[in-house]
View 1 (cartoon, rainbow, N blue to C red):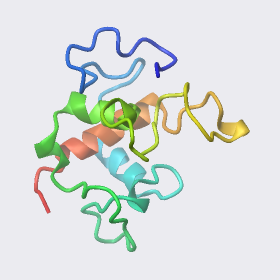
View 2: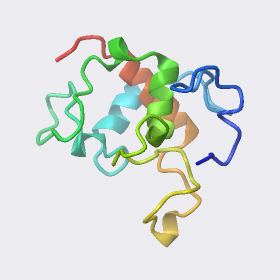
View 3: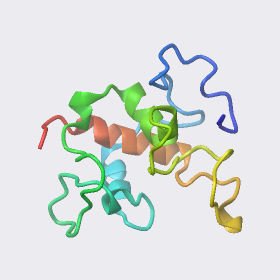
View 4: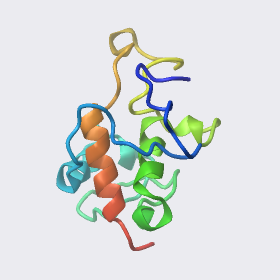
Length: 134
């Protein structure tokens, strides 16, 4: 279950990725919000509800994203986006940046992350701003 680069080599806590992903700039919450709201790119709203009221038909299968910045640190959020199975092996949430050891990956997507490293950092920056619980 390792990524294509040694992200976990220096992890001090098993439930987090303490350092930003390689070759990224600080995450942009505005871009992150757009990714979360985009049903073709982030797909977050298929399962989660988020404080994005202009987006109808949000999911209720997974936890509400409101308050994520209060529940988890930035390193914890980063791991949950990059490889959620490291936290919950039974999760149905996709690994947005892991590319190996995955099942049911279409041939055209094999070896490619769902989100770029910068997109992951942007989503993490947005989720970290969500401080109010639902």
